[in-house]
Image 1 (tube, rainbow, N blue to C red):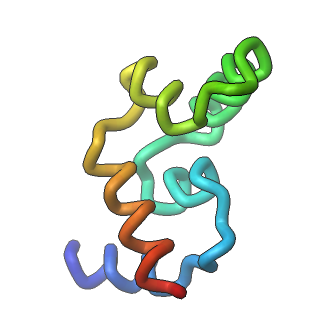
Image 2: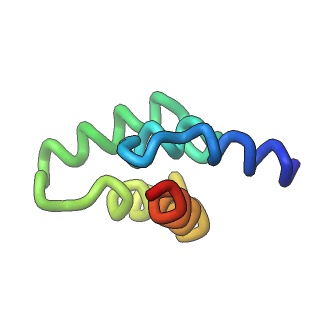
Length: 74
Protein backbone atom coordinates (compact mmCIF):
# COMPACT_ATOMS: atom_id res chain seq x y z
CA UNK A 1 0.00 0.00 0.00
CA UNK A 2 2.72 2.47 0.97
CA UNK A 3 4.72 1.80 -2.21
CA UNK A 4 1.64 2.39 -4.37
CA UNK A 5 0.89 5.65 -2.55
CA UNK A 6 4.41 6.91 -3.15
CA UNK A 7 4.24 5.95 -6.83
CA UNK A 8 0.98 7.85 -7.29
CA UNK A 9 2.28 10.93 -5.50
CA UNK A 10 5.49 10.91 -7.54
CA UNK A 11 3.44 11.05 -10.75
CA UNK A 12 1.53 14.15 -9.69
CA UNK A 13 2.42 17.48 -11.25
CA UNK A 14 3.38 20.33 -8.99
CA UNK A 15 0.65 22.50 -10.52
CA UNK A 16 -2.20 20.03 -9.91
CA UNK A 17 -5.30 21.43 -8.27
CA UNK A 18 -6.17 20.09 -4.85
CA UNK A 19 -9.40 18.49 -6.06
CA UNK A 20 -7.59 16.59 -8.80
CA UNK A 21 -4.96 15.45 -6.32
CA UNK A 22 -7.49 14.23 -3.79
CA UNK A 23 -9.34 12.23 -6.45
CA UNK A 24 -6.08 10.75 -7.72
CA UNK A 25 -5.09 9.50 -4.27
CA UNK A 26 -8.60 8.23 -3.58
CA UNK A 27 -9.44 10.70 -0.82
CA UNK A 28 -12.37 12.24 -2.73
CA UNK A 29 -14.74 11.08 -5.44
CA UNK A 30 -15.43 13.19 -8.51
CA UNK A 31 -18.97 13.69 -7.20
CA UNK A 32 -17.60 15.10 -3.93
CA UNK A 33 -15.37 17.47 -5.91
CA UNK A 34 -18.46 18.74 -7.75
CA UNK A 35 -20.23 19.30 -4.44
CA UNK A 36 -17.27 21.22 -3.01
CA UNK A 37 -16.97 23.36 -6.15
CA UNK A 38 -20.69 24.10 -6.00
CA UNK A 39 -20.34 25.21 -2.39
CA UNK A 40 -17.31 27.29 -3.34
CA UNK A 41 -19.38 29.18 -5.92
CA UNK A 42 -21.55 30.39 -3.03
CA UNK A 43 -18.48 31.61 -1.13
CA UNK A 44 -15.58 32.18 -3.56
CA UNK A 45 -13.25 33.36 -0.81
CA UNK A 46 -13.42 30.00 0.98
CA UNK A 47 -10.68 27.54 0.07
CA UNK A 48 -11.52 24.19 -1.54
CA UNK A 49 -9.76 22.28 1.24
CA UNK A 50 -11.63 24.14 3.96
CA UNK A 51 -14.97 23.34 2.36
CA UNK A 52 -14.05 19.67 1.90
CA UNK A 53 -13.01 19.52 5.56
CA UNK A 54 -16.20 21.19 6.75
CA UNK A 55 -18.32 18.77 4.71
CA UNK A 56 -16.46 15.87 6.30
CA UNK A 57 -15.21 14.58 2.95
CA UNK A 58 -11.55 14.65 3.97
CA UNK A 59 -9.38 15.06 7.03
CA UNK A 60 -6.23 17.04 7.71
CA UNK A 61 -4.09 14.08 6.64
CA UNK A 62 -5.28 14.46 3.05
CA UNK A 63 -4.49 18.19 3.07
CA UNK A 64 -1.06 17.47 4.53
CA UNK A 65 -0.35 14.91 1.80
CA UNK A 66 -1.28 17.46 -0.85
CA UNK A 67 0.96 20.15 0.63
CA UNK A 68 3.89 17.75 1.07
CA UNK A 69 3.57 16.48 -2.48
CA UNK A 70 3.48 20.00 -3.91
CA UNK A 71 6.46 21.13 -1.84
CA UNK A 72 8.48 18.01 -2.69
CA UNK A 73 7.85 18.40 -6.41
CA UNK A 74 9.42 21.85 -6.60
